[in-house]
Image (cartoon, rainbow, N blue to C red; front, top):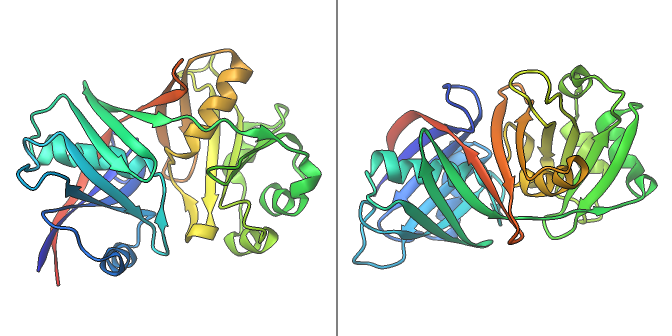
Length: 287
């Protein structure tokens, strides 16, 4: 069996930046076990599998597809960068003729629209709830040490904990944090947290005008640090929109690779996440 595979860097227009995802467009469903083995082999934060819903469709003419995402250890319910990369594979490499593609996923229908050099993803918004920092004292200590923390919120349905560093912290505090994934995972075993977002207010007055910065860690899902995380911005977008009084924001995830996301919080309780992609590899998995 031969399976086509594409590796794309998402949320960037430069190769080797942003977040790499492996994308496999499949003519037929495979077993969950095989999906997981391929994800282990690709060893990226996500490997995505696109399958046809209507057998008479092909990847050029179809407008609705099924999409699933796997980390090296598990299947996940929502992934932004691999959705962006999946749409790019269909639009760029399969020359899909539709203006909008819809992916049926574990998080419902996700629509992706081509716009200029990028793609707009229509995602669910996941507003987090404020929490007492003492409730998460161990995980906060493991992540940020003694740096001052301004806000702690939890998105219970995505199991993402968001920790905001105090405004007195410089951006270099966030970028220079050395977070030990083993210590992080062992500091939180209740099952309430599967991902940690660290964030801080941006500098919109300095070009290119980022409204906020973040980093994201998910050792609970086999991802020590994720380079650029669309799903985390369904939480961050909700939080910062309220704090900044803005619907449209420009965000930067300052991992070592780095990536940029344009956000628009909509009145229908969803969020548009816009980004670009670069294809760095095309090949065939032979089984």
